[in-house]
Length: 445
Image (tube, rainbow, N blue to C red):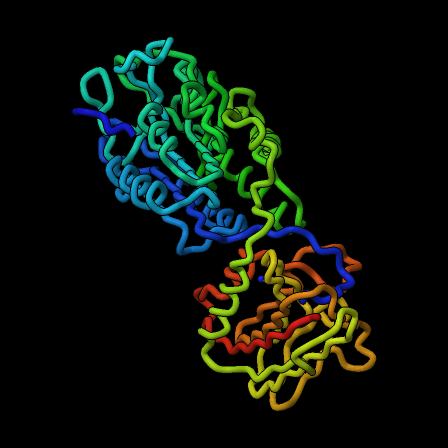
């Protein structure tokens, strides 16, 4: 069988920092723990891996609509290739980011093209990969994957591979033990080599491409019922950096994942060290995008899509720099009130209410609320020239943007990452998702 080749500004007491963005980014998450060929052993915790990576992608600024998940029987080779072609290659541009994640078995086959000095190609095992004599069919070969990556027009392509990809990793942990299993498939007749997946070839040197794999060439990545060790490290590093408002590079992610892996095992043979390759300059760049004016449009659309209106006004429609600004809201229904300011220039979201002086944002309804009122302990001032949008959201669910925001404990206001904003409006099993909203726009001259 042939292979397939593949957005005023308000003067705030808080320090303002950069935020990740949305844009037309794309995240493709692939997880395979169940395989159609009975010769391929099933893996633990792949569903946990995908759940963690969906949350991590949200923290990084990828919307649900920008994230595609392929799992088990939905992750056949043709499904992966189609997603690469239609979702990533045809769906992104030079300003966009792409995140590709794979969790599952890795293996190797004989090199058919003659481009590998060691005579071996690395393979990611899809749902329908099967043992065909002394080789594998329907595997995602490194050459094919690399060729497709070269065609992705996005300016930044981040690849995370949680799979074994070493031909020399053939000893120890060959059977499930203590809830762990190596993510490595060895079959009869498999060629042996020390090559790493996408560690060589033109794709690894593609500008903007960075590949972070779970293990070195001679090691095995480990899965468990609570998720794979590498993925758990990645997830915790991303969520921690997001919560603290800190930058995070792929190089730093490699180290954070390594530390987490070491903390999870007590036997040397179960330890593996994440491997980083690709664009050296991009490896040190923050994976949270710094600016995106389109967040303004996103929040405006969210206000217009509310279940009921909230009448809110600014005390005037034009300000001079340094003027005090007052916000009035008529709250007819009880709920949880959040007031945010959005920068049109770079999409920065600042939480004005609740804040450090008023962390409880539940309001009983049936009256006017003015921000700030005398004695509340803070002022809002027009800071820079340009447009100002202030948006108010009233939710039935207990949503508190201040607690979800980032900043120092002494800051009056906090910054809200777009991913946290989006996640707040996603209905859960115990939430209605219903909300009211309003906005006001003014100009600072």
